[in-house]
Length: 520
Image (cartoon, rainbow, N blue to C red; front, side, top):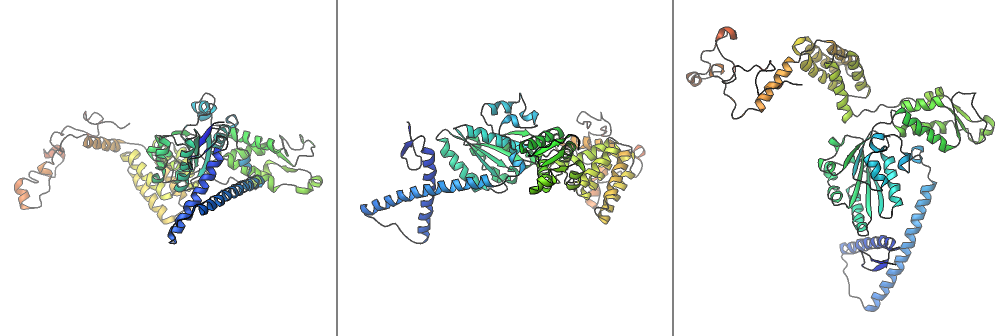
């Protein structure tokens, strides 16, 4: 049997027991360091000891090591036993263990995808899983954990940024460096990684780059906003979509099948089979309704199903009352649509506002009504919507209907006076009014061409003509400020109002010059 040196005490041990020894060695080393630092703070110093005393200390140290090892093993067993006895939520029980058990996400992990091929080969890349709640990010991490468990050269560590800090990451990296000496790769799953600020995220950079750890991050927020670019360049961003109604329905039926005490029927009083194990009878339409109101969140659907079954559990009276019957109406009365996914500070916020603006631009009043109402329903700030409507009135309607801007500003003032929720009708009315108004982007496009000309100008900008300058002093008049200026129309005044060299430039014309562009 090959022997391996311990990186802590430099002693040789057999390969089968080296891992257990290293864990004990690290524990004892940390304990000794703490005791030494404590003694230094208390003012104690090391004293010279005789060889006999050293022998006694060494024997006591060995005895304490064995007793500590027994204590650790007993504590570990107790923790495992308590974990097994602890009831788990249904969503946690239904976590898949194999890649083939994942439901949905065909584009990211479906057959033929690169990530699926890598995971089948037991290779785990650095990646950031980005998707809404309940779409399968943690489930995928559970599959990766099972892959690591099957391999002798991989270990899986799971942390959540809501509870862990930088010191926890440093401890994992410290152990990972030690494990790498034994050809073992550490896979770190960091849930809610966007909770770390961008300075804290820098902790991962050197260890991901040199391969000390393989990082899998999970986030519900757009990584472009919440993660720093250096970390994104070292990881592949995997976009995970909401689960479809069919996907959620598959997960619900799988949960019922694993329960063994639930019978699903298409119609009540027709397909009910007498079975001693059956405690619940659920109508199939109930599961479809749950899948529809879950908004693609499998965790929410499973939690609602578990809550419903628990509330209607017949208990010890099963032999008297029979199994609990759950119809569609029963579940609808017990569980309402509790939320709508809307992040007021994340990507959903900008996407919804963009949908409002583009619907107005396209004169689609029905869509403008829908997106405005949806933003308000999700808790969006009414004043923010009103400010965006003012922008739309200037950018897309412009001079085709100048009163649209007046009404948009009045809508903002009305929202400030009335407040929520009464201001909702003001915003919806304004959005529909702007959508139905005639459109003209003439001024907006001319402004963009003018901005482009200033950006691309080479050398100093042309000076303002003297006759357009304001003469506020005698010296300025002597120099020529304001000389020859008159109040007549441009066609009668004989004056040029553009700078020298730009007399023939027309920003309102798409072909006003080679240096100007038409906004698309």
